[in-house]
Length: 111
Length: 114
Image (cartoon, rainbow over all chains, first blue to last red; front, side, top):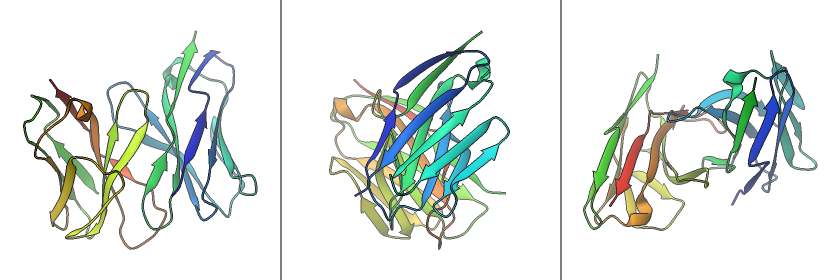
């Protein structure tokens, strides 16, 4: 089955800096890679996603890149703000089943 | 629009007691349904998923079970809870019939086994 590794587990940045979170996956058949943000005590919510036929996708300060050959994808947040502080999860769609998630990255943005 | 409801929001149960968490989805038909568990430091662990009534697939062998008695209803159960069952349980749904779709989470249920 699919296995998703996520790094780093914690990330601290200054307001205005960029943050990068990286994930690798094992199943070459996986074709959908979303990112979720979870604030303390709340449900995870989708912030951006990418499909296997696309190499990069941007949405304002957030971007995701995908390298299918290397089986890794990354989340880039530019000009970080304190409200970006949360736990971020990457996921890969395991063919025929469901999304398999990484263990999460706790991002702290200090002002 | 589609909405997902999950209850109860919190519960404290003694070891060995039964469990029932319920989830319903509104505004869509034949959704794919999922149960995930979030324990500290372990991310979001897939427990069960269902593509239709009575069709349940288990990802992790344990003392939990799931049932889908109606198209938009998903239930997570246990006959005897263990301390290790404590965690944040999340029901989720995605549009049925297609692969690789976004999933949408319910508000979650905090379970503490004492």
